[in-house]
Image 1 (cartoon, rainbow, N blue to C red):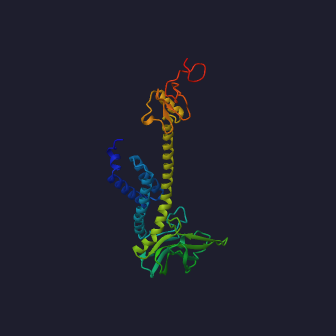
Image 2 (cartoon, rainbow, N blue to C red; image 1 turned 180 degrees about the horizontal axis):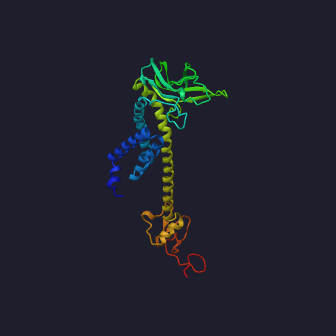
Image 3 (tube, rainbow, N blue to C red; image 1 turned 90 degrees about the vertical axis):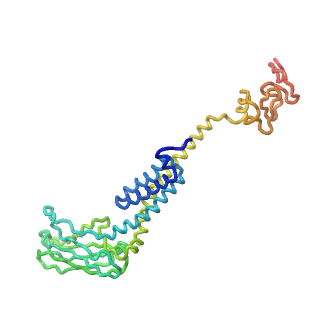
Length: 344
């Protein structure tokens, strides 16, 4: 087989393999960090499997090793990138509008924490503006406002409460909470405001639109970049190997299965074109005039007819081709309607 030229030839060379590996790592890390896991899955399948196979790098061991390197190195790149994003202050959060015709009718507006990133032991401050005038008619004024602070594991760590709302007041109220956090990590929080229906006596709870899957506002980040990176690393690698590694190696196993099936089919086709082994094959070879030497030479315990050279198998007294007696070595007369050894 002649060496492949062009792009495929370059990609199968050592510099080309290195380039494929670098592209796979960077594409996987960038798609995972900035586009999400759903996009990162087809990206790693493309750059880690499809592209190398197209270039001719089809060895399963090479593909598996390439995928493992991409996952490990991409995870090491993703972790600091996500840590940097985590340390960027979250945007101020507000609740949903109460009046559909007024998009600004939000009971809770511009909730935030300050500072967003600080050392353990810092006293953090949360502020939010409450607008009592947007409470729907038929309800009381706001009764209380809670700040629920969640630790790095997402469990409720502390609840701060504010109840100093004036009855029937329509003036905005700025509420402030203070809490000291001693444990390093990525914390989160949520606020809820309550008011009661005058006629039914039921409570209504108003939450902030956190903009996250677990309905909490991210922050504050307690600790330095390195300590935060240490807490991000395990989660990153778990996600990378769980959501990217499993699809990658599952598809690789399917490719390996199909490749082995194709190889077995080719071997079966090759065997179907080979001469059948055994006596019939040897006799057909001898009948075609082949020599008993070389590849078609008699096997051990076999001998050649001294008259025509045909292969004679053990326990035979006469040559099956010309009828020569093996005991005398002289040609025997060809058989008639009688027994062997007689000429017609």
